[in-house]
Length: 63
Image (cartoon, rainbow, N blue to C red):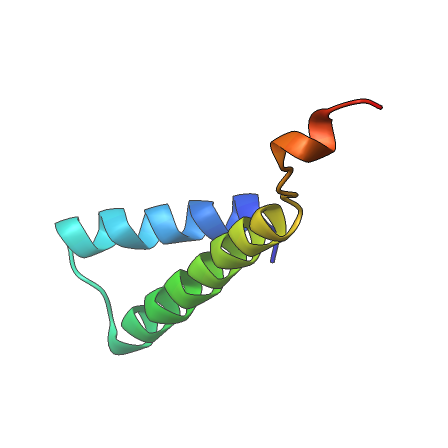
């Protein structure tokens, strides 16, 4: 499932939960979608942090 579709479904289930409530299967689906979404966000953050390079002042001085 693409991220856009996932977010749309999460939002739909959240609105439905506030208005009429969710069935047991929808509650399970909502939990699974949240876990997938958060896993995706965590992976993006980890990827970004892994790409960071620390540089010392000495490394910046050109010889």
